[in-house]
Image (tube, rainbow, N blue to C red; front, side, top):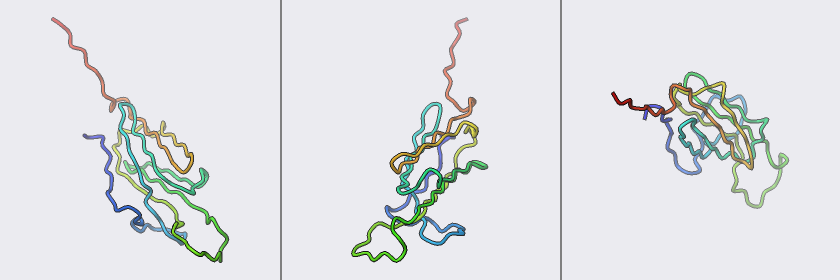
Length: 134
């Protein structure tokens, strides 16, 4: 399908490919589902610990980039008896068709799940063509 996004496959729990950063710390790839509907693509990303003010979404030249900054949950120097949950920022990029109406993109964040609505331009939406009888 021409409008189908490219999705990178990865192993569960692995850190994202290193990106150029000005902030130290780990960067993780959020788990993502992308659903194609007739009028839009819907992207759901797990970004626990990210606040709405700390999410940056960019769409440029067919590349959708999602970045989320996570603030530390505990004070620096906290002594852990057990620590299994890694704290780090989130980064993920996708090649998405140019058939997205960039001005109509919306995002919402609730309970650690980021939902992006990427509406298709009118020309990319499926149309039913009626057949005339002659």
